[in-house]
Amino acid sequence: MYRRILVCLGALLAAFSVAAQEQEQITAEEFLASLNFQKGTITLPGGVASLTLPAGFHYLSPEDTESVLVTAWGNPPGNETLGMLLKGPEDILADESWAVVIAYEEDGYVSDENADSIDYAEMLSDMQESSRESNEARVEAGYDEVELVGWAATPRYDKAANKLYWAKELRFGSIDVNTLNYNVRILGRKGVLVLNLVATMPQLQEIETVIPTVLAMTNFNPGHRYADFDPGVDEVAAYGIGALVAGKIAAKAGLFAKLGVFLLALKKFWIFIIIGVAAFFARFCRRGRSKESPATS
Image (cartoon, rainbow, N blue to C red; front, side):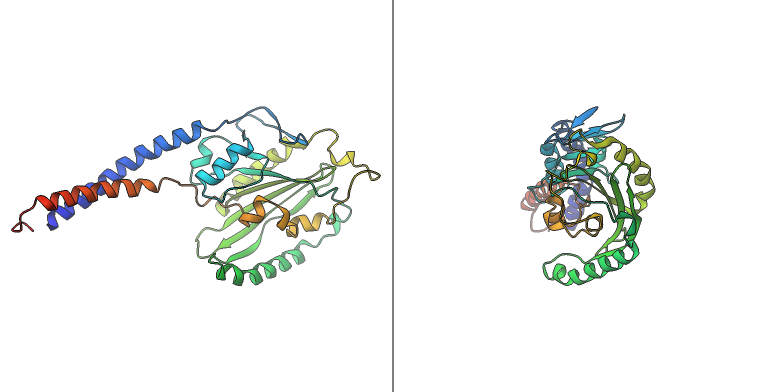
């Protein structure tokens, strides 16, 4: 009996390794084939902004983005996005991949009048305290604590281009590798383009080299630009640059409100292979035991 158990276990491990590789490859190919990786100049849904993609970058529609977020990465459904920006199909399923999720908040014209006077060190301290205070509720709800370790990149505002960008270092529970949450906000006539990128801290240097390209390729269309603001007609947002960084409008941010921060940790969706292979060999072992005589057992 014990010999058969060992044989079954050995066969299970060997077959799982082969079957998992074959199934993962098939599943990945089928999933990626269902996505439309677009290139060139992309007008985002709603027509307010466009992406001018350089070679090596791709765009996914909101529908395809939802498939990636939910099916591939295990996030809740119902995400409100304008799509996703990434380098290539392989980035969706790779362990250390990254992607930029795009959204739009039409809350009015955000004044940058006080952009140069914000104390980001003091803001960080306030944000860290707020994060600590919210952890009790997170734990009670069954989630890991989140620690805002600090700025991975101090907030910077390009007044000529009306583009704000910064990065936070986050620690989730007891996970060994800290999370990098890179944020870009592009100010427009009636709202703000929201670009969120999440990776791991070891990828910071790589992401820092990509951010200038992301900033350059993403712009509002004529009539929707920051310079097109008409104070006699257009609404002014109830918050300023500081609130964009502090996240005090997060409750209105659709996808980012739901997820808290956009995580890439659940990208592997082939767990069902284990169940399938294990069930097959359980049946095999049971069938073998039924044929054994009492003497052999």
